[in-house]
Image 1 (spheres, rainbow, N blue to C red):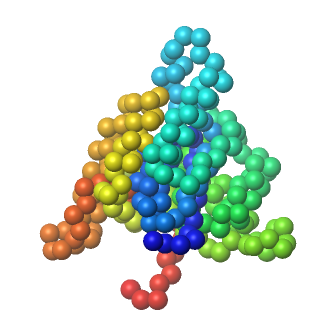
Image 2: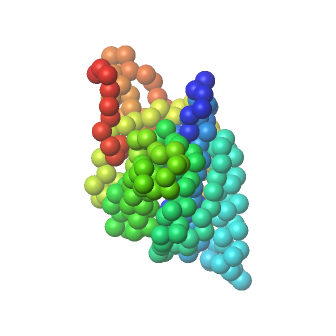
Length: 244
């Protein structure tokens, strides 16, 4: 059991954390971390097509539905907390006030690691804005001159989770995480996202493919750990070690 460790997931939309790092959330909760998920929007305009096809649908109904789905998914992953900023989507806009609220959240949590989207996503600019803000707010949280007297942030790694249509985003995974023991949690969380049913099997298949990469890079048939499901990430900052 790991004591007093925390993690922060910065998710542009309410479903992003489920597809892209649900296994990491469930696994680290099992390891004793307290994982907080911060959703900037509900994905109400751009990621809720199934709901908008229903008659007499309204923006508030869509938001309520997506919020409920995300809360159920977070519960399935045993997440410590889920927060909704309700900043809108398509486009997501994060002004100075919202940015400083994220800084406050980072400082209050003091995460051991953070997660957000790929640096580039030509299909969804909300995603790459989120990571731009993640990098910027991490920097501000480290500044001694920002709200002097508060505990400043150290140097948590920022892991960039896998985008959709990976090969077009310039995203290069250098971390593979075995999520086999918490796969059932992730699959339950995936099935909470009823508004995006078309992605359920896609992300199941992706987890199986990444497990193949985990096996290959952990030693394969020469002693690597057998993994059935995995997630991949790109680390944003250098890794500091005492030995290799």
